[in-house]
Image (cartoon, rainbow, N blue to C red; front, top):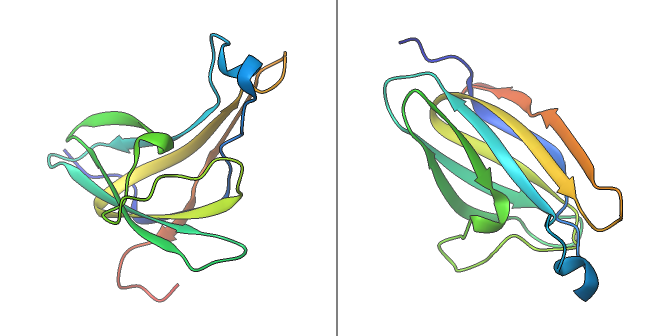
Length: 133
């Protein structure tokens, strides 16, 4: 099957909301997800780099989206080679690079208020690796 999508995706507005103790006991927990669609015949290996306002980027977060599947990759489940985890309560941006073309969407559930808020957006298509962007 044909691989649809791109190999480079950017998400400029990422944020994992912090819940207080009472909110942590709720049925729904705040989270973020990379929603990835891989229409190709091979597994897609994703490498994620985080960018911050006040420090150098965090690199080497990885995930896999199997061939001809969709994966909803929880950001809090990602860990870098250095043992870093996605920070809570700190704004960041994400660069997602895949070894094969995929489609990437970003979703955030904010359950820190009585009325939950769900936000989703298509990631910005950064093109293909090796292109001048």
